[in-house]
Length: 131
Image (cartoon, rainbow, N blue to C red):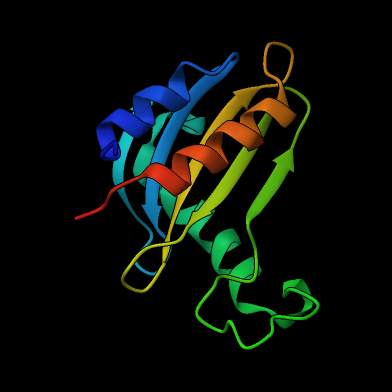
């Protein structure tokens, strides 16, 4: 079971990976970072990505159609933002505590494979050990 550093290094092995972080979206603080950050500042990127993650996680419009009483599960698995040269993939991590963390992968659009990155980031999120 990989810890934060191992998980982030694994994310950086994905084709086109430019940077990765594990972020607490409640505080907006990065718990770990690797590679580059958009604008060169991991802390600012974490804060801005947290606002997007919080909005997606807390608004009912993005909730699962039939949650069947599983209120402790995050309603959103991931958020994808694309721009002209890159993708930002935010993958929520289910934890034993309050599940307020996500993996943020910054991916070069020309070199990366968004579908592959989404699958692998999901696998990493399931294996990640926090604590």
